[in-house]
Image (cartoon, rainbow, N blue to C red; front, side):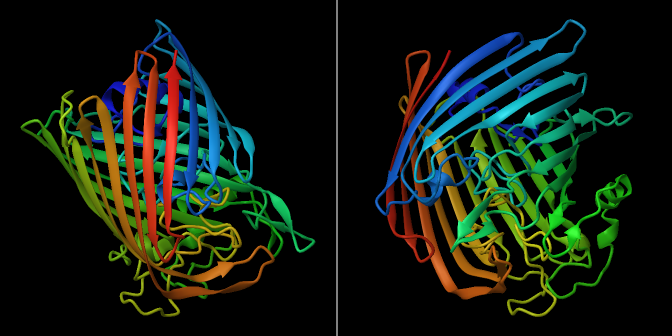
Length: 493
């Protein structure tokens, strides 16, 4: 579960984690140009995990931000078999491919490819097709509670992505201004059904065949070698198309795609009924991200601010009280001090555009949508921050009014790399949730406090093996009080 310095190449090969900001100086870890640390390499590896909790379920930090690999409702044992290949031609063309086969024994056993992708790159750009892990945002992903828009909480979905290879210099700016961008089309293929009281109902998504539009653009002022870097950008996702049992077939022509791309159908200052602008066949969600990074005297200090976007009013900075704020301090270099990095984040979505804590008719029901009732989830897990959780009996996100604090510390105790989390949240539910049978109702509840903790300990066994022990605990009103233990053994050859 850890990303120790000496295990970085193992993690990149085995889990191929790619950030939308790979190449930024404060996005750990950074990927190389082709997504792998070396040219002309083949790597094979495996990972075996066993996790259990005293309540019979997984503690929050055992199943959250794990790309949906472990089932939260039972004990788990899982095996990952992974392989990667990459090659760079003398012409500069770089090709790479990867696959990660997950086999899990749990209350709901599963066997699937977590990753399976092919990637081609040339110069400053690359094209990726398939399922590949990625994150978005300027948070420190190794220590963050999770980006508001796209964290490590849900499994990768199939996409075709055209992107820059990290930050690239804007021509004519003499190394002063840099950009990082991507454009993607994806498929939300979690159209599964199950019987509930002898009735066949959707399990995750109310609309079948939903398409995903994705793009981002970040700008950075000053180079990575400068004492200060300024980052800012926009991430935009949109769900569109598909067939709804209520609205019928959504339009999917190229002109409709252009409407989605430019957000034209949601160009209104008015918020209506369910908290969305009049846009039945598009669900737009995104974020503004800003950060300041300073590299001085062997340390890196980062301050971050992320604003969640839902339709036009938020995009016009109407909901500035809702968002994520944080900072981290990291010691640069290869040393292994007792404390290598410290991160703190505060997030709040208590206001929902109203400007106060009282609910009014004009609100934004974050991560949910009145037509796309599966909301901003994938296979039942929130794509954004995991504190905005989903429940098995509902579609979409059933808790989107909350505040949270998250503290993370990592470092070394001799040969052991440790990482520890302490996460606190106040939870109030959601204004509107949907059952699979189409019934909608208010899901607000009285304040529920929750504490979740994690301690990871990891060490290397020889040149090829890594062993880890993880302890986790939940205390509060959202999840059952729970103590958990996870054992992990991994290898790379």
